[in-house]
Figure (cartoon, one colour):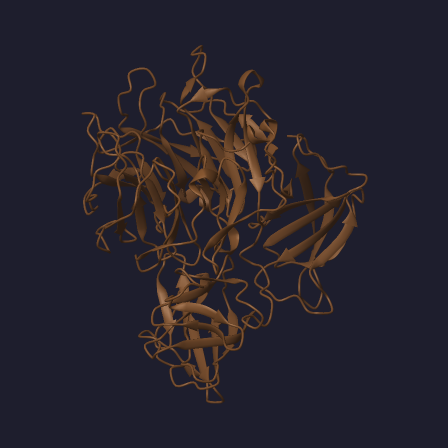
Length: 624
């Protein structure tokens, strides 16, 4: 990875009588394969945090990248995120940092719009390896080298700089088909970084499942790449071709797979980063055993297990939901049509999305399905099966995942229940371009809007390649008002815009929701805020949902805080620390009996109450 730009000097001003000036460097990186010229590129940088920039002093700075040493007084000391837009000729680059460190340089990697870029560094051609993202880093680990000449090395990549390095030690056990998940070691989290768990897999030579896991720890001192702890964690069974997801507690759930007797297992187990132990006590079993499942943590905190194969290699049709702690099933399993290839991805507003290639390309096959937050299935607008050579899904900002079909990049449109081609993406049929897109190798989300995959370029080597299709910070300022000209910035938790749907946008009234139907502000989360929303004539007031990161919800206008149910024109909700305060129309502000954790960030949604149709218009959310 080529460092393209010298440090830029940023100044954060503390809001005190005598401002304290803190000098910080912003370092902008670009890929060697997608370079930006420092001399001619122009940039606009936006700072964000738990604050509302005043109209007369926006938290933004414009400059040419050659202006090294430029002082930017526009950025306040409470800055927690940085978005960098770079323009050069007809191409725009974008990158963002959603976890600005408390000290030291702020590194941001920018990606060109519509173009995939190769990160620098050959990671060796291999099969059965794993690509996994955790925090600002990724690992390429395990597998077998194509030529079989030596043990594959373990590689670490930094998504703030794009730099890919080989670890000095790497994995202590040779393993293929392992899983990689975030593993928030308490000592590492304390310094604002993230560890990783590499679990299970199989011996590359014998194929025997491995009954251990290893922990990667970044350098606590902040220098160097860190490495793997030599102490391994024992698993309850040998497990390979399994699935994994991180629970809201930070624990890793391992699901299904093949065990040491070469049987497809129903078992699940949890690996705890605090105790460095695995457990099966109190963990539920799958209703249907499967290998190679897709395991997703939903917005509700629930775990959804989908897809996979049975012992005979036949696709499993059953979808299963489990509680946030994996202790029990929460919904009755349901069956979804299978095909020769399937992909699943969770949605920010709730539920999940599935795209399926049929065994036979019949025109009436339902290739796209919406799995709603309440567990019901609904066919969305289908993609012609002949247009699906493969299905690679990546979670996206605005509850809009990206899909690579083998022919083109597409993006989900939640209010229309359909995929739409990304116009400026690399959709050219030129084989030289298409060979650089996701194929059969490992892939992962770098964040909600960054697709990553292992790109095998034959004799030229194997590289990690990425495509940024969206960039949105959890600290972004929410435009005001919303739900006037359209439903933008919000997304439904079920299929919308079709006959019989319980949620829709009406240009005259705003968003209309039947009982239980929800629309959430996507991507952004809040500490203290004030929310105002109008109640359209002829509708009931909406329930305002405050959802914590673990999926726990406080419903303002619901069972946890009934205030707001009597509103006829307007509802106002204020959150301050753990307290939530509600005002209906012009009445007095009332205190909810249920509180939130004082430090918890919440997502905000609107939901249909128990009375016929609930409506919402002129929504405004202001950070405080």
